[in-house]
Image (cartoon, rainbow, N blue to C red; front, top):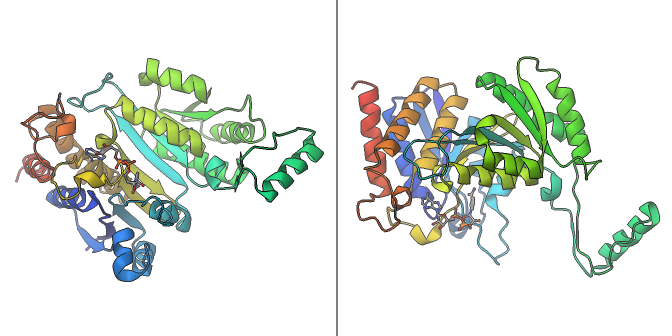
Length: 364
Ligand code: NAD
């Protein structure tokens, strides 16, 4: 086999959408062997850990994986397996293409934006000082001493670190991505006018790296203006590169512009390992009901196929998914004009319909 890919089905709706994805990927004729391993709370019962060593070993060996969503149970003390994997493998770039497909319910029809979000630092670094704790009072005193700024005593504090190294990594990744995928423009998003030493540093690095890529247009936008621009004229934007928090918010905004979570794929990419997954979660209430939309998982497989340089299979799969959505016959409830439409089909019927289209596109 040419490619061995780590396959993590996840839990909740994960296994159903994974099965649908495997069916359509295999229909393209691509030479892939799946190395199936799993993680999450259900695995904990059997293996005593939410992230078994064999998952880690498989990803280290194969370098590329695709996963279904994994539930983070509330109030049980389990950390998010998703966050743990991003940290462990230093998957510093989150890539989320947001593209209009005719047939998907949306207010817009001409969007083709890729959001590239930094995954490792910013307010997400988890440096939290709880209100009322001794260490928080000490920090408040330290800030008064050093900066002559009095933070209210009853405050909680989250710290926002932004480093040159992480900025360089993500911004260079965005320009390389633009170059490789034939895109024309990269927009750097920030709030440098207010946060001069964190977002200001991000902007400085953005401008420096942009100057190294003569073939790609560049511009920067303040994040609040960016939100308005995306709502008013999203067709003007191509690749956006953002620090972690703005990336989190804007990628959901952009997913909303193109029709929501059911069609939003993603990938978390590091220097050595890449792990693709849909943007949505495990939707536990639909588990095992053959009801949910497998499109975001299938489009995540399109990204995975492009990553392993199986561009032709990726194009065939994307065309088949797009045709199926456009025809609107074999689609799940969330793609219908009303959510209780009796003509909606289930997850596995979508997979059958997309696999049939792939056969036609391949002339077999
Ligand atoms: P969710 O994405 O699971 O669900 C949000 C809404 O979207 C729900 O109404 C759900 O039914 C619907 N939905 C989601 N996917 C759908 C699909 N493919 N087709 C049709 N409808 C779909 O978000 P949530 O409820 O906030 O999270 C549920 C669990 O998933 C949580 O434990 C969360 O931690 C986890 N989660 C995991 C990941 C991941 O594995 N990367 C990402 C997000 C959330």
